[in-house]
Length: 174
Image 1 (cartoon, rainbow, N blue to C red):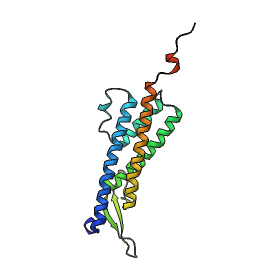
Image 2: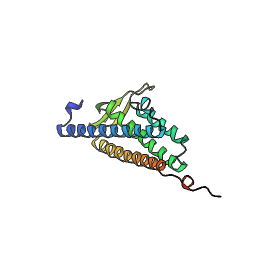
Image 3: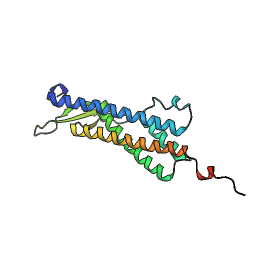
Image 4: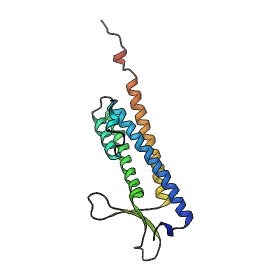
């Protein structure tokens, strides 16, 4: 059974949510590239960050943040958790975008369960994931939430560089 055999209203709802999810994931990837460019603090960042796949950008952010003098241990911990969420959500996104949509025919009772199937690098067998309106809606919401977390972290990081420390503003004594 293929997508054309789905009820029209259900199919339309899936495609609407798919479009919203793809758009939200693209916004998240853009924000991650902005964060990476901000962290490396060079005008040349665009040459190796912009257009790079999200997993490489996420790795770069994590690596640079570990070494960055303005990123405290507490802020690093928050960022690392956010980056883990980004990775997990973008992996879910891959299942919808790169997976073939089909019906799981293994249920002997005959219930219709939609799924995605795709091959992933290095694996001999395909990966199957559920395909549902609820899961897609949850993914859209979760992408929006983690994008907000990325933006909050980035704004706080930018602000931390624009406020002089007490030692920089103090007059020398003696």
